[in-house]
Image 1 (tube, helix red, strand yellow):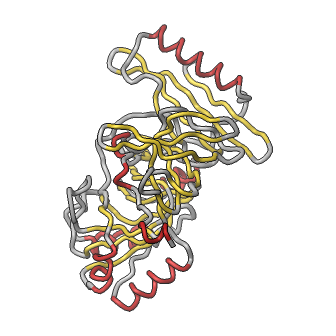
Image 2 (cartoon, rainbow, N blue to C red; image 1 turned 90 degrees about the vertical axis):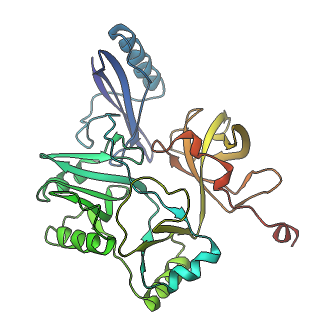
Image 3 (cartoon, rainbow, N blue to C red; image 1 turned 180 degrees about the horizontal axis):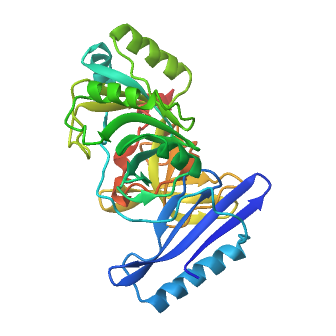
Length: 353
């Protein structure tokens, strides 16, 4: 057996787990992916470097046995998902620095910046090349995507590369990086017009266009509307800026401003009663960030995995997160990014009030 698809159903819980042995660099690796049926699968590997065939089979068999002990079973179609892989593409997204409260007013009043709604989903580059559709995560790794998205993507003409976020089985595209050639050197306004012209004729149901908002009055109005609605935030993009992968050391031509607080944390231990301990790096030292409850029907993350949590604020004396809410596993960022520098701390005067 070189691959397997396992399924788990219990009440509202409906999950899939895939595992596969693949050849790599003269040896073999054991890759896996898991998630709720019909959603984007979180992918990873059990072998950081290639191993021999027999060792790969032992790792694969232990993994399958472990999942079946937890109630997973074989025997159903795996047609809702693409094939598991952790192949690196070398394609990386442009990452944004946060805007401070002091910078916010300038960005709202500056006509050279437009805004788009910041969506609460998973970052995903979507590529079609030579008739093959691929999902690429924030780290440039191939990741599993829902089959309905593959079907819709196949109907779009030519070779292309989109940047956006996926929420459930719907993809929200906010930039066009390639369409029969690279568009990265063009200004953002030109790319967003090209994206609209590219998507509008197709009218595919699972790929949506994220509209830009121009002009100071409309920018201010939509900013307040999204804030009142409890949306995640907004993104400011300079209209003539090219697309540069990675995050600038400071500043940049694109900024994000979040209405709610979230952080990527490392799971340091599993507690009883469906909760885990969280940790963050303070320099090279791991410090505690409190506990977070894992909702019923959601797989409890393993020690060492990175997860995303939403919270109200962090306590300055302890770094613990107040009222954290579990959002899910992050397989698209490095552990070094889980630092205390992410946190928004409650000011002393607010704590004393």
